[in-house]
Structures are given as structure tokens and as C-alpha cells.
Amino acid sequence: MALRSIICIPDPRLRLVSKRVEVVDDSIRTLMDDMLETMYDAPGIGLAAIQIAEPLRVVVMDLAKKDDPPAPMFFVNPEILWASDDKADYEEGCLSIPEYYEIVERPARVKVGYQDRMGAHQEIEADGLLATCLQHEIDHINGVLFVDHLSRLKRERVMKKFQKAARLRESEQA
Image (cartoon, rainbow, N blue to C red; front, side, top):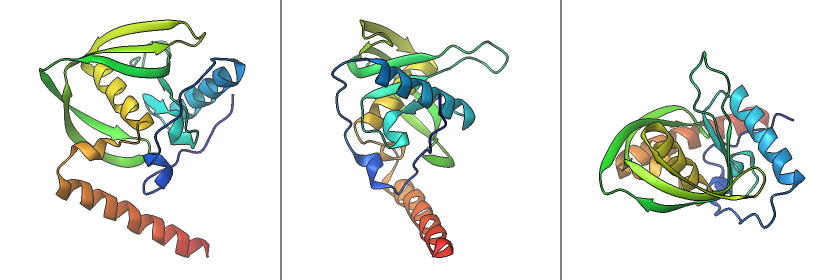
């Protein structure tokens, strides 16, 4: 396993639509292991491959509580098969938008089809935090950020803040 760098806004790669994984092989499992280590180190509860500049439809998650043993989950080519009409609000954050949190409204329940770590086809029905995280990470592999679900004013404000920070970093490195 290896720690990888997480890319942050305004990096344009975060807007890429990730490619479908054709075969879940050892290289994909190594990628998932790297993603998991990177996510735990950040620390976070979910990570899409695009967040480490790998435009593949791969997601890892671990929603275990702090004192519980790790419970990693692996999703290859995840897609939402069904979403409820009822909504739920959760405060979301993102490793690619550090230290920024906002309430986002999403469907309260979803059914997701995916391939697991070994490539077997699976389906999962989720609600609560798991439903929110699945939707958040699937958005990532489709080039969508959680701030895209906010009002235009809030979205523009956070984007400008991170663009300014990126320009400052670039000028300091020059």
C-alpha cells in the first residue's frame, strides 16, 4: 500500500467523468488499497479514485466509528439503480475541498449496483450516512462535487476561496 496525494479544487481533473473498469484485477485491488490508506491518513470516510488523479470508477469507504474495528467497503463501477423520493439533509465535507462543510439535501435511500473487490456483481440498499456517502462518491466519478448541490452564491464563494489559495501557493513556489 502507498499513500497517494489527494487533488483539491480548483484542479480541473476533479470534473472528469471517470472511465469504467473493465476487469477487477490485482492492479485495481492495489489501487483500492492505496486509496484506503490515503483515505485513513487524511482522515476521511470515503474516497473516489479521481481524487488521487486516477480517472477510474472506483470508490472506497469506511463508516466505522472511531473505536470500532475498520470496516472497509469497495465499489467498482458503482451506479445508482434507484433513489427514494424522500430527502435527507446531511452535513457533507470532502477531502478535495478541505475544511469546508455544508448541509446537502439528497435522496434519503438509494439502491446501488457495483462490483466488489473480487469483481463479483453486487447490489446494496442504503439509507442514512451510507446513502449519503455513496451518492457523494458516485458524484465524484461523474465529475460532480458536493458544492454543485449548493446555491450558486455559496458554490461561487467556496470556488473563489480555493482558487485564491491555489494562486497563492503557485506564487510562493515560483
